[in-house]
Image 1 (cartoon, helix red, strand yellow):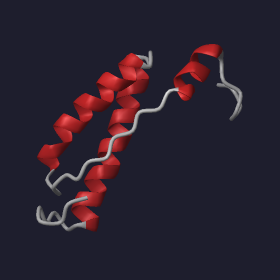
Image 2 (image 1 turned 90 degrees about the vertical axis):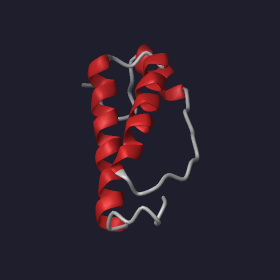
Image 3 (image 1 turned 180 degrees about the vertical axis):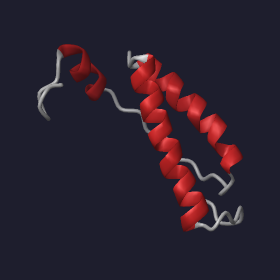
Length: 80
């Protein structure tokens, strides 16, 4: 593990690339499948390993699920 701010050449290339997407989705966990697929696909294009892609995807889905369930109380009329 390299100290923060010191990345290998491969990691630096990945950090130089940005993936941004703005979208409003309903507070339904069924929405996460499509988001998961898009994130994993984009990370593969950035040459992330399958292990790292899965960890990032799981972290994102956990955060989104928490926002849906706890923040919006699973109300599909409350998008985020």
